[in-house]
Amino acid sequence: QRPWAEPYKIKAVEPIRMTTREYREQAIREAGYNTFLLRSEDVYIDLLTDSGTNAMSDRQWGALMMGDEAYAGARSFFRLEEAVREIYGFKYVVPTHQGRGAEHLISRILIKPGDYIPGNMYFTTTRTHQELQGGTFVDVIIDEAHDPQANHPFKGNVDIAKFEALIDRVGADKIPYINVALTVNMAGGQPVSMANLREVRKVCDRHGIRMWSDATRAVENAYFIKEREEGYQDKPVREILKEMMSYFDGCTMSGKKDCLVNIGGFLAMNEEWILQKAREQVVIFEGMPTYGGLAGRDMEAIAQGIYEMVDDDYIAHRIHQVRYLGEQLLEAGIPIVQPIGGHAVFLDARAFLPHIPQDQFPAQALAAALYVDSGVRAMERGIVSAGRNPQTGEHNYPKLELVRLTIPRRVYTDRHMDVVAYSVKHLWKERDTIRGLRMVYEPPTLRFFTARFEPI
Ligand SMILES: CC1=C(O)/C(=C\N=C(/C)C(=O)O)C(COP(=O)(O)O)=CN1
Image (cartoon, rainbow, N blue to C red; front, top):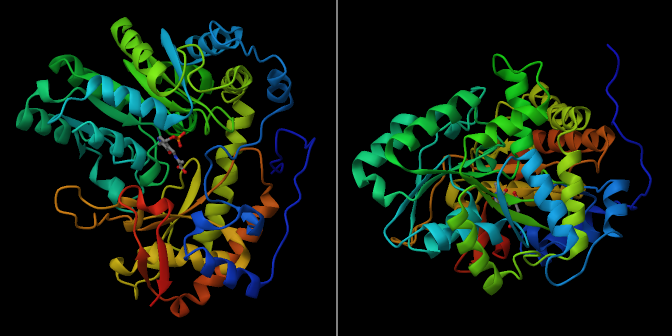
């Protein structure tokens, strides 16, 4: 079998260095056992996130010099608008500084206090902006998504019965839109099938409910449809993505993932009244409608990234590199979310550390232990990320208690994946020595970014 190689060669490099174990034990203590609080220079292989950490191409770096920094009507905005129209198919676009900027705008425009927003599993910033407008997020994802070992090909799917039950319970006029994330980050980077999108669209049409997408990793979703859904094997990913987005009325987008840029996002839509509202709001919160908190050069880089992200060789390698890491862990009998997701390998911390109860933060403890073992930085995606229920003040107890090994696009080689696999396997052998944590500082919202812990 001819070996896989990256569909690119390296033009610039950024040295990374290994530290000593005692140095890392000190560093994680100072970071309050929270990998978000580590200094980047103390990290060897950074798998915290694929957001904004991706490598730009020579054409994107070149595009920066073409940035039109005019305050209004910049040429670069129209380049971005054209790329969104051509690749995503939406009529209108409003740039924002990043994804949560777009989530903020659409939540303000469409959500009234007391509304319900169904979605396929929560995402932290998305739910926070819905709650800030007095909305309530309701999870309508299929049950399999909450089972790390359930090997369903489209775990991101909306459970139509759950969606319709919510409509029956609260009435369509209390549901401004359903938010369908492509892929589902917190479920383990899991895709939604085209057939499911068609079903959701039918329910939305029947009840006059808008269908919105969180399209942050929609290209990875398109690749899984190509691989797993009947009738799509021979279609280019670009065509599959266009069809996926054609079922939606609009989307929020964090360009920091699929679009291969370090900053940037946008709100795209087909209805002109939403465009007008977004333009009114964007000048308050982000900037002019033709720059939305971004420099002209950023919009040029996003536009170029939008064309590059649908290259079939690029996205095939991207997905296979994540799978290459995941398969090494599966072979060693290590519990990870299956099927292996699009942007990360998710360790099942509950199965990895059965001796640590969830309110001693097993995923947080495992991420800290991994860093100490090898300088690899991962992200907690469990009870800490799930935050507290705004009504009761109690922890939300998610079924999924995960550690996310998130692979940036076009940054690491498969040799780095081997180093990560070696470290996780070493930890697996020593898992009984890992202890639970207690939270010693807890911020009021999105606590996982800045909370601090101590070993019990
Ligand atoms: C699915 C989804 C995300 O994954 C997301 C941000 N994700 C981060 C930062 C991550 O580490 O996964 C956001 C927010 O985007 P932003 O980080 O504000 O550009 C929205 N939707």
